[in-house]
Amino acid sequence: MIDVIVIGAGAAGLMAAYTLAQQGKKIIVLEARDRCGGRIHTVNQDPHFELGAEFIHGNLPVTLNLLQTAGIKYHHAGGEMWEYKNGSFKIGENVIPDWDKLMEKLNALQQDCTMTEFLQREFGGDEYAALRSSVNKYIAGYDTADPNKASALALKNEWQNEDEDAQYRIDGGYHEMIKFLMDAIISAGGEIYLHARINVVQWQKDNVAVVAVDGMTYYAKCVLIALPLGVLQKSTVKFEPPVPQQETALQGMGYGAIIKVLLQFKEIFWEDEQTRKLTGKDPKQMAFILSDEKIPTWWTQAPVHNNVLTGWLGGPAAAAKKNVNKDDLLTDAIQSLANIFKRSADELKNKLQLAHIVNWTADPYTCGSYAYDTVKSESSRQLLNKGIDETLFFAGEYLYSGPAMGTVEAALASGQTTANKILSIWNVK
Ligand SMILES: Cc1cc2nc3c(=O)[nH]c(=O)nc-3n(C[C@H](O)[C@H](O)[C@H](O)COP(=O)(O)OP(=O)(O)OC[C@H]3O[C@@H](n4cnc5c(N)ncnc54)[C@H](O)[C@@H]3O)c2cc1C
Image (tube, rainbow, N blue to C red; front, side, top):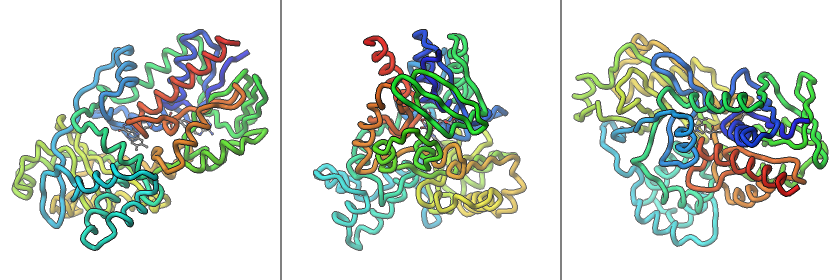
């Protein structure tokens, strides 16, 4: 009999399956898509495109250990952060005005509340309009979160732990990591089934039947559910018998929205003489641009100089565009760049070679971006991480507590922790 069924072949599910298979457990992984990786999706072309995760956001132990075991190299990412506002460019050191005052008030906060409530209470006056707007833009951009739901204390912790200098990209792309995990699982005797979209989990202690939409049923002693929070919140997977406490806990957690745009141009116009004159700066140093355009955030592949620009729209504005078609999103993206770099949209369209527009919120197997903390998240995580009756377990980026929320690190760490919990239960049994 199969020991563990893992549902979902993203970083969390694969890391869990890898950890279990290494210890000789019989596992199968069931994945709805025609590929593994989930929110890691590298398109192999020259240069490769990261449609999902792209950066390692810091010196993150589980990710870096795994890369070392796999012999996969990575390189430093980044350069200058530019801000484009009211027609001029500046190198942004801190894009939030009155930052010190903001942190002072956050440090004094005892009782958690949403960021909107905190801002209204502490910075409600007209003189703080710029601060409120910058905080909201930052939360939407980086955390892809809704300030009306995001926890003020969790954001404080995140901002205190940021290490701006340590950002990396994986040589060959994040898929190298996924490939390593898949190969290791299969070499250890595990099996991975694609096109296996699960919609029912029937369970009793030490016994599960997992049913796919095509009617296939898989049996095991226990199940590890490594689905995205957004998919679970939509309740498209039914539990029989139901798990009402866990369902409520899932609904209390925050899950963001994101649209990522990758544009490859025939030339690197953002590094040319026209851009140098326009900005008055060395455009080769530019890594990020923050703006107020429809697609507000852009980045290059700095320090690598290639012809790809990436656009990013996160948070409530991305959620509002869930049903907008890709042509309209491309028009917004081109117009945003045309406004920033003072070129005509037609010129940029003529220079465009290839575009990938990924609306992850509209993707039924993701339904959003990644988790952010609400006031209820920590208690939800504690409940979900306990599992149910030593038979139903959960893993995923949203179940990680620590400084790397919403990342691949969070997913890997959660997968590893849950697998170790299953192993320790069996060692005792
Ligand atoms: C646009 C974008 C950019 C990002 N950038 C970064 C970054 O730069 N750095 C970083 O560290 N993190 C980044 N992240 C976050 C990171 O990608 C995620 O936190 C992480 O990959 C999540 O892994 P997971 O295993 O928890 O979930 P997922 O990767 O979503 O895996 C869940 C799996 O479940 C499958 N599934 C869904 N429904 C079913 C079903 N019914 N039956 C069976 N299978 C199903 C899905 O297809 C998927 O494969 C980014 C995310 C996005 C969307």
